[in-house]
Length: 145
Image (cartoon, rainbow, N blue to C red):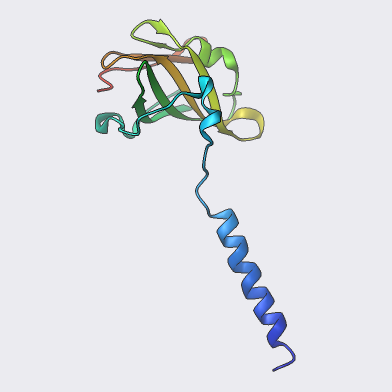
């Protein structure tokens, strides 16, 4: 038994180390935000968990944050047929009819079928968000606040 103790201890420590590495929540560096925007973490409670699904595509607004002159929408997009990391999807998105300023991908799976992104807009506190991942499929989120 004493001969195996170092090996057992090594296995246990390896398992703990692996768990800490792989189960740690992802942290997005502030520089990942387009324009390196300083942001307020006060997300609108009404916006938490807003989700829609159309044609096999699901889009969820997970948070809305504000800075001095910017509104940032954090989205999770999922499907099994389209590449959701195409820049045109985010460049053509609008908030109150105004185009996005920029966007940043926080994560994406191989093939772009699952993506998390932040889209930056001119600051606003009301209105509708529109995004169209493919021709003929538009998602409109009204009353975000």
